[in-house]
Length: 125
Image (cartoon, rainbow, N blue to C red):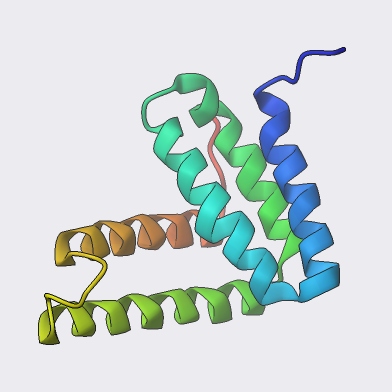
């Protein structure tokens, strides 16, 4: 059995997202690959240089999977969800499943990923 290389992980995840897109639509695929996998990959990339080096390739693949309009629409949906969560946490903190700081961290993460996905050029250094 061949050992799975860490570099292949994001490629397999993109392939899975394409299957999700065909079976369940763009929104579900975007939630999976950007909302879950890219967020996690970028967090690891902040601490592991080999992941940081692979990040531009991952982002490039995502740019080819989604149109700019699809990405914009889905980021707008993410941002609205975070605003709703923030409002709920402020109005009834005892009922909120997320604390305001965790929501703020997630908003910053998604903002950085949005900038990365819409950047005119991706660096590899």
